[in-house]
Length: 454
Ligand code: CAO
Image (cartoon, rainbow, N blue to C red; front, side):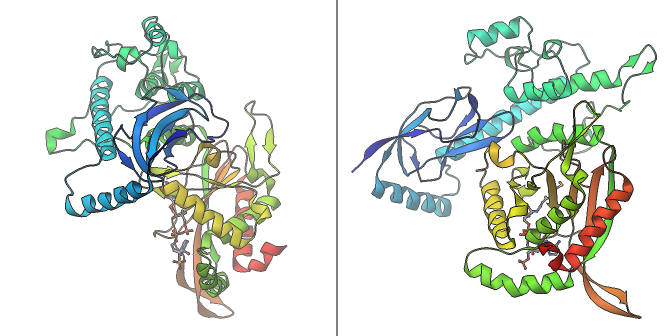
């Protein structure tokens, strides 16, 4: 028996009027519980809203460009138990038997990828045009509101919230930026190009800012076949922040090694017990604990430089961000109040956070309020690296793969498990001597985990 159920926007944190950037279903589509219905993009993050139950989409109540808040009606879905299950079976059959046939969602995503590709192509065409040349004629766009069109025509820099946020962060007046998007809409690339032009322009007293060579004119296809692959949405959002942090924060990276032989013995002893409860006890929980001990001892590592530049804001809470590698790009969910949690709870929360990240189910709140970040490549390989600080935080801990090494102890070489540590810090806030003290503290705690109890 089918029942029409309304699907509403769930709790999305403190955000209101968030833009719908993708509609992934259409009337008549069958969906399973947890299938994504729409994608929203705030100035902080992109999130997909899943269907709370399976069934057939009766109607879709939003379109791309709409602004929605918690409680807004997304769609009406005819929930029918038998059919929902059948839909799941059918999907399976389609995956296995007819790989060339796409579901509506796949088609929508493919269409959106095509659109991205077209956008990317057209934006690369415009970036190679000399500065000041007019943007290519834009196709008619029926979905802009009259207010948006008027704003664009007035040259007031019509742009999405994410682009406005970027411009705001970089101190760019959008009214001065010529938009190459539809109806003169200012795109992220336009803001970047504007900043680049300002930074490389010569002033009366000599060069202003950085002098950077321009790569935009290179036609790589001259030397062989090339493919154009649009950047993922996460990369598009995080790229400008990484670039800004790398250029504006004076980074220094302190390298060190910690002996984790005993820690690893302890972990191996507890791992199976926790696995029975569905929790993976990886090295990362111990690293969070050790970091908190060091952060408490050296509070400047848990601070931010005030915008005025003349004081530090030292945080008395310990929210540790974890860099998670997902197919769409890097995201950093936060483990809150890590100082108040035991190893096993940290392990459970880490598992949940990384799963949520990989399912693209992290909301903006899950990624806000961090005070220190850990980026672990230990499960993959490599030795040291130089992680980029997640400003306005002032330090980030990079972890590489632990390896057995001969260590000279009491007159002989003994095999020990050695963990490479890379701590990048903001040299405006932290002196090199304190960074060496911080990694020494980490070494101490990791080599004898009883220090985590103190
Ligand atoms: N040395 C040796 N082994 C390590 C290790 C290290 N430094 N770190 C993790 N391992 C082990 C784990 O303990 C686990 O072993 P078991 O199978 O015996 O339990 C195994 O490697 C796999 O771990 P994992 O990587 O799946 O889990 P994790 O908790 O260590 O890390 C997460 C989780 C989310 C951080 C990780 O999956 C990830 O995404 N890493 C990439 C982060 C990244 O891209 N950073 C770069 C940012 S700069 O661009």
